[in-house]
Amino acid sequence: MYRFAPRLLIRGIAGGSRRSAAPARPFSTDLPAAPTEDATFVEAWRKVAPNVDPPKTPLAFMKPRPSTPASIPTKLTVNFVLPYQSEIANKEVDMVIVPATTGQMGVLPGHVATIAELKPGVLSVHEGNDVTKYFVSSGFAFIHANSVTDIITVEAAPIDHIDPTLVQQGLADFTQKLNSATTDLEKAEAQIGVDVHSALNAALSG
Image (cartoon, rainbow, N blue to C red; front, side):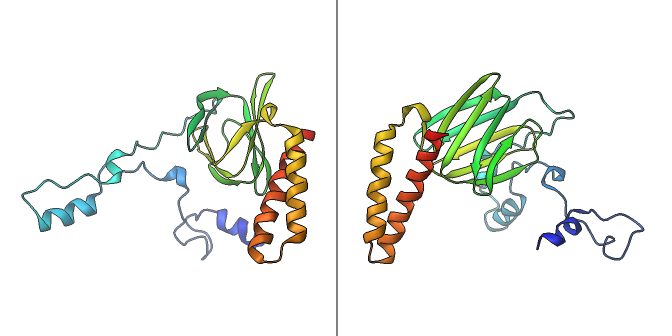
């Protein structure tokens, strides 16, 4: 399907071919910021209860999309959160490298807007000569066009907080469980354990 990609990325231009004359789908950065009021809902509400103020919808609590800067910033603003804590909040760094399911992905200021699913692996935050590494289990990275990146993971720990002995023991235990598994559920659970501990082992040895 990749051979169709250039065709999908070309915007329609006036006076072009029949295909290019069709309305082009706008990029996300071309779209206006979301309104703070759901006009369709408000209109429907007023038809039913004209004397009662309509309740607020989720749009009312959302911040407008930040505008895309005219020039590329020198720093990348990073937010890194877990379900139970915020690891990094509005920190300006030079680069982050995330373990996307498609491979290691480096994110610099000015990166194109992207959503990347994360797999077990190393997340590295580069700030000058300092590099902070975390092992993440899974999650998503939301890379915005305004050089802000939000990283959300289920579990994460600094690499230097991980005990190599426990990792080796866990890998051996899950490998044994995988070899002795008799049901699809047991095989799936054991395989997840093997994959995570293998990624941990690679992170420590790398």
